[in-house]
Length: 278
Image 1 (cartoon, rainbow, N blue to C red):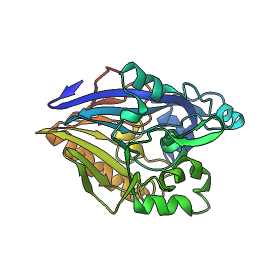
Image 2: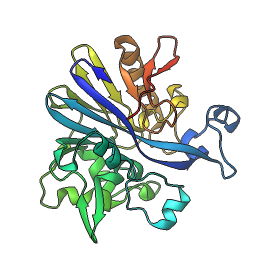
Image 3: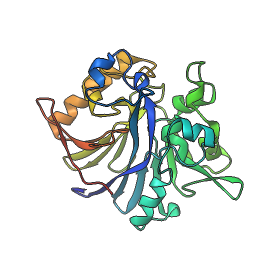
Image 4: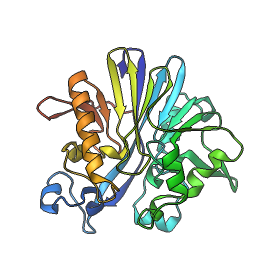
């Protein structure tokens, strides 16, 4: 789709399953299961939703998904499917990994940052070897030394190769416009350095929400994840984002929605999806 000078492609960089309690926290199952059906193991379907944008001659990738490095045991536990979805989609768009100019991951959890690196002939390499990677310094520091409840969410092989003399990672300390029309907002809440991406073309904009808004049920401000480190901050940042999105007609891209990942939030709170997928 096009938004002014923005050429946008919404894609799925893998599918998997997550525990419903993890995704909906204190929300009773009798409520959330009306929105997302759980299987016999209390698991719900998830997608790793990514965005590829062309703007001012640059190619920008936001969110890389789980990637292909999970062990067979772990891949089976999360019912991983289509782990090569990101690169397959880029190939269909005629974009080589070395043609990507910028990569933005909303945070460094394994299901968002796994695709930053990949194994090739026994060597760990960067998926996008020439791209600038923008990460909050607070997220990087926390990912290297997470608290005990967060340890399993970070895999250092996903991101530490970015700093191995490649000079491809650029650390941010809060909000920043990293390229013309490419704005990053530090929201925290889910993790210390969680960020969202806002792409702008004139009065038009598209926001990639990361785990601030995972799926369509999370469009309710009080519905947060049990994995959120600061749920009250998540709610504050969601309310701020929703107010802007409704007022200025921002296209929202939800990080784990399986059926309707992109759309507009109407003033009455209804979700109007944009169904086109790459």
